[in-house]
Length: 128
Image (tube, rainbow, N blue to C red):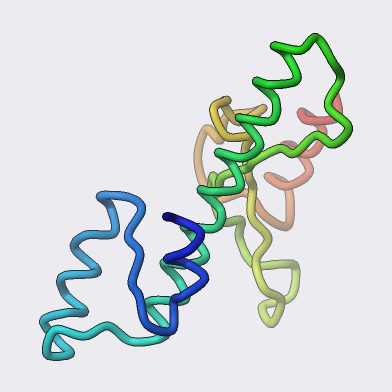
């Protein structure tokens, strides 16, 4: 039902996580019981991402049960943190993602990683 709801996002709102409920309620109150297409698209994208992670986990499980290597391996990642903007303020910031169900490969002790000394330190740590 996740995918079918997300496919019909022009007419249907799909909330896949309790963290979305407050935003959904706010939208419903602000729009007389309706939601905007922008919200439905955002929620549909989350639903497709969740469905893809389920599909990947199921395919991996079947491969393990059959003792076969999967012909395709999919990895699901989740957003960990947004980095500082690039070395030039007009650049969009990059982000750090971690594999779903695992910890990030490093810890940020303080500040916001990005261009400069902190960026060089984090990069060096990852390469080691």
